[in-house]
Image (cartoon, rainbow, N blue to C red; front, side, top):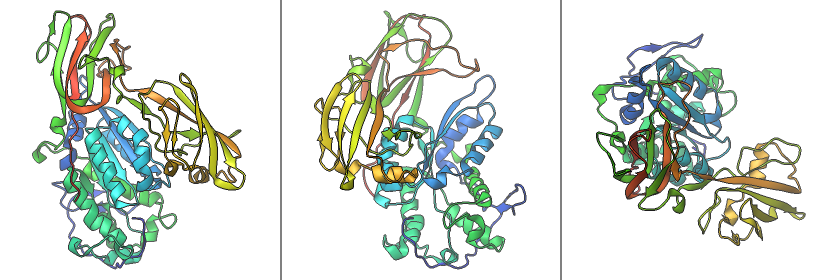
Length: 475
């Protein structure tokens, strides 16, 4: 990951188990996989126990950089949909090619944590401390199970790299070996994540079939069709449900309370004391008047935390919008409003990395001007931009936009991740699908009291609470 330069040659592993065959590619033989998937069994249980009468909704996010943008993720998605046809699968790929861990640790603020996945499938190159920050924050701010991937191999010398953790250090000469054989296994163990060791599987597959690493690559790093197939096979092998593995570490992070059994309407109030950072209601058929929502006696909109920014992207005149954020992250010092923001930037004629700008909110109005090399706090305090978080040249360069335009606008929004009133939504496409409404997410992960004002006729079947896990120490 990051630096290159390792010692490698042939590795001998004993392989047994079923063959996975596809197309004209040599099949891959997996080792004893009896323990694979241990830490993602909540997701796999939801998938495996879905029925036509009771399909479970499962949210899966692929996140990373250019490797995760490739077609292997579509093969994995197709496999899941084929194996679990009754599940309501909500799958997104928000990978950003070219963004290493030190960049994704910033964009995860808009891309990863707000999505609130049940399962995160993650691979990225880059700085090891930033990699850990992403995993730690995923644990602290979501209830996602995590499937981390080691790296595939790129060159023949990778076969003989040092694999003994005690002999590895985060230095240039050992970087890939350090990440794959020491850092990532330690992170997975510490945070209760599943580790797909596709590096070992890759080496064994190449050795088994007398192939060079380049046989699976279309350039020095990215996968060709054969490599995409193999990576999909590696990941799919971990996406298995086995009750013998026992509950996932995240099984108790999500709890559902049934109305009429666990919680009750009393004098027009539905009250629940809970601990967590997100609370949803599960809907049932039936119209009803809007029901007011309070959390600790306050409307969700009165909390600062359940507001969030979207990606800050640009659309140079006459071009498509660039998906890579040109500023990340954007912060605030004062409570946010639900509104759209525009930053109008002008490039310094003598310095392509220096910009002057103004910011305007659709509700706040004109909110100040600044320079990209100076910390900016808008007049309202609702926009804060640090000098190191400007990324215009690199982001537009990834989109092939050179030279930089003299002027451009940056746009983002503030999203409400809450509702102040529960209103029964319309029916789902499939009437068997569970319909939920998030009352608030991003709350402080502490004890709270939920109060809904309505009646027994209010179409709420249950309340679901999400309580992330806290892990503080470093490996």
